[in-house]
Image (tube, rainbow, N blue to C red; front, side, top):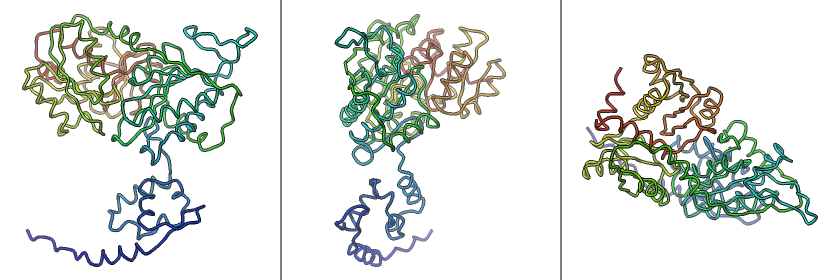
Length: 459
């Protein structure tokens, strides 16, 4: 095979030198900027680039692949930071404390519209005025944040926006998304906001929103309306600023987890996670169990927990084999997505995990019913039909899974990305509960994990 001809760099260098001599003026500004600054602002999705007539100039890419250029242009034009099931943006470039406060104020206005005069659970203290009569209460919103360095700054903006709109803020501090959702349900709060960049690289941040029923806010409808309100002027519903107080939810959360860990045989587990809080929670749980857990730290980055070639997945598998453990447990930084590896270090795929959990549900309830995302349903449909399991097929989003569980009365909901919901009231998604169900499945026999996976994957 002949080597491809080498390109002459001189034409490109000459072209670049010519471009460097050009200057640009951003919309609304008086001073010109150089070509380098012009490119840097476009790369960071500078807000004024959206209305700039020169943003689509063909000489901006300097040989960048057309596919990447088209995708970047789409992001610049749309200007949205709403992703599949939340709000995300690069810290300081597209998402900062000021913008977080604006989004939080828009969220508060939506909550005021939905329940302008409804009180909150008796778990919270009654707010009284100087004359002793209770005042009109604003919506109660639970807030928390993950361990990314930028999260404290963003959650500060969220709290400021909510309080300015008269909301009663319950601050959990650094926590996990499952604990935030648990607290929303426990306090009967109007909503919960968890500041996180989960699903993206370490430079990203944003937040997820969950409503009173425990249902994540979907893009279509709720988050779209939230974005529209953010881009418009939001009026304050009250002259009184809201309150903010802390709430220690960890003990209550742990108390609710004990029921999922019972009748377990002694098992040794390797757990990989990218947070410091998650191992501490697991250690408190496993301290009262016959099982033992060894932790492996993973970096904060964008990953898919079912990629067999992922370096972190391989390291967990290698640790399981070298230490002679029964299984490995990988948790993404949202505390919800998770995966498992067998005692031989093999990654257990989503369909295999789903079969184990469905078989466990069948043992508990013969006429079992599950809610399942379309991607997973395509793989499992013949297997489900053969076993007489009724499957409610929905779109591949958390909001659709939760809605399907509430409407159908099913007790198990599954997506192809490693998230599993259990049909409590409200339905709850937590990697720790998923792990507990897998450990219970292993405890029904002395068979190794790999054999159990093989047994449930058959016809």
